[in-house]
Image (cartoon, rainbow, N blue to C red; front, top):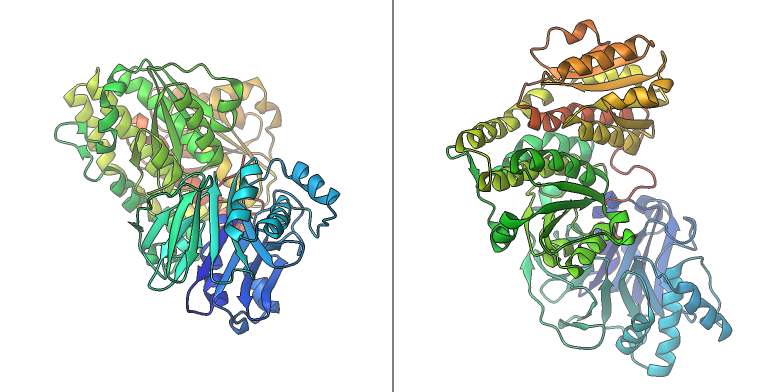
Length: 610
């Protein structure tokens, strides 16, 4: 991981590549580099740190050449330093390579190369692949053949781009498990790991398929499998606008995306929700409607924030459709030989549609005969292509590493999915209408929360320097507590835990003292009195209580140190509204602590390695 940009055409390559790398900075990285084919050979500049650090020591516009490649690295093998930064070259410095992914058998290949007299300058698995390709080129005399032969021996995942002084009018790209797209211009072509890196130059793209190679020249491109079988490429159009991946006057992408949620949530049900009939139309599920109707069990698999959304989905689907649901960490799912039947439905949730663990889980589920549905945000992503059917989130590009609008869009889609199934079974038209009416009110209710952030800022200021937080919720709001804690951990580096409120007495209560802030999600639902009892237990031990409560709750200010009011909604939709102040609390605490909100340390936006 994490970002790749390659170019061949008539423009000066280096500035274009660096501009593309900046578009990919949100994905998280620890070093950056660029390689350009010049008349004197390969010109490589790279260093640990940010792209701006590279620019501070290199006059990028002065690098001549119109064929090149750049990379931002998120370390997997070897510490972040100049030597381990990409691009890497073969032994003779004539072939350059950038790589996303992990070469699992790199040590075996490295030992073979070392026994043949080859040496290495870095600790990375990626350099091993570059040197291996260089060795094969000496025998085969053809770059495409050398890359293809090397990849036939590779185990693991890769998205690579390769160029060579021997064949200077060509770039080769290949992928397995790590996304790559081709940007199709007029007499110029790009290759990148993300559409945001090419949209400033073209909207026409080709999504490379699994185990597919692309050969790009100034006059055109071709694609084939790694086994050398020609493939047919489909040119598609990028579905978002350039301004959607710019900050638009906000200090951070995360804040912009928090404030976009009234729009993105509405986009999630626009054209799908029929409030008059209390029904939902999800066209992407039409091919599997019969399978859904007959499903005996639903398994939701996801990672991180998407897994938290899946937990809410479990409550929703079981409540409305009366189908048993299990929620699995995708990272564990495939390794425990899961029991999957042909009448099971597996739902994969992923913002990027490229999450390696989730992708591996759906392949395992398909292998065992289950019907697999994708809920993803990125059009054309691998999970969207490999599932039997699916629903797009329509949240637009999410740049901030800490997911915000994608989470609420996932809840929007999961609520509609549960209603869709419920109307097939036990949910009446009147019950459906009540839920649909409440769902339609959410965008305006989110706006009301966003219009009153001063109390949240004050709480953030008071607690920004604490070392620990506890987040508690019950029922639908337990997953929201988990998500609130995750947001705080991700961007402020404060240790935080989410728990079911009733479980506090089974261990976490030992942590509570006058220095422990405890966030309660406390809507006035059927278990409100239980939550109040839990709050009293914290107060009795001098804990500091921050409550997320309904705006008409007059009692809770008497028992909480701080109250953040949210509009009242029906119980199953409370996690949506509760998540907004929790996102803002994490954001403002991170600001108080001077943290890099959009690019938190050690994190990557799209996790494409296991």
